[in-house]
Amino acid sequence: MRVLVTTDLPGDDWRRLLAAAGCHPDVRPSPAVPDEDRLVALIGDRCDAAIGQLTEPWTARVLEALRAAGGRALATYAVGFNNIDLAAATRLGIPVGTTPGVLTEATAELAVALTLAAARHLVPADRYTRDGRFTAWRPDLFLGTLLHQRTLGLVGPGRIGTAYARALVAGHHMHLVYHGRSRKPELEAEIAALSRHFTRHRQPPVSCRFAPDLDDLLAAADVVALHTPLTPETRHLVDARRLALMKPDAILVNTSRGPVVDEAALVTHLQAHPAFRAALDVYEHEPELAAGLAALPNTVLLPHLGSATHWSRQSMAAIAARNVAACLQQLPAWTGDDILPFLSATPPAAAPSIVNAAQLGLPTLP
Image 1 (tube, one colour):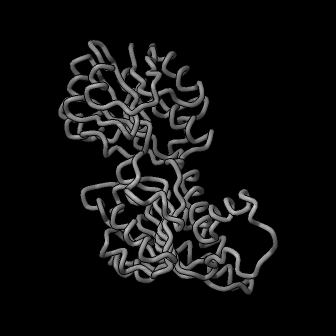
Image 2 (spheres, rainbow, N blue to C red):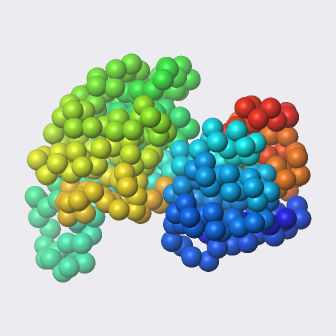
């Protein structure tokens, strides 16, 4: 069975998994992002399944071409799937797989790194040192923001957001304000227990509260971290009006999806408020940056590295391959929360993560 793989993936396990299922991976050599026409051409006349990337336009037209070529599954090498016309895939009977659960800690760690880099001016300080300008210690050199006992605003308390907040609350005694679709009693209980632990050891307590109104969070937070999926409701969630609500020396961290922030408005805000900082791993029109963003000194800009660890990226490839192989073998869809069993020597006989399994009426396990 031919499986189109639109770009080569890290590691070798995913190739072995496909081969064991009777599949031949047809790997496209070019790293350039294919457009609709190119994807249709790559699919060709016979394609049993495909493994794609989050930057590719898997539109109704492309999915129809996949189905016409005999396609029975599409796996995306990502957690998000906003680039896939899920309604069209469901209408055509194509299961769509994602790779959750194996990039949580990696993305959370990168968000922490971005926060610290922005707070302490690490990028310009590194450049300053490399340029040979460090000639003596100075009391006023690159003065940054102390995170200890400051307020962290978390937008999107999912797996990644919670792991990120946990690191900063536990490690830097930050107070947490969070906003999402609903309260997270488990998160609040965890922070309360952590605060009791701190006070027992004569350390300052920490607090956690839910902010039903996002505007309240933005006004209160010293650091605002975006960990929300991209939906019609979250597109330009942070726009010019909401940027104006934030503290003039706040730090905005985005490792979720670029269009959650109005990037042109962010550039204008950064230009007008030099003490304000933005630490970004994703961009509205990725890989292009908004005009003027790259020239701003009060930014930290990374090339979408959230899950970029050897283990995470290789595990994502393995999960994507298992999604495809399981669908082609007509195995059920996994409904458990834990994906890690699929990385073991004896994985469940199921597809790890099919987002439209219920809509397609697929059998499930367990």
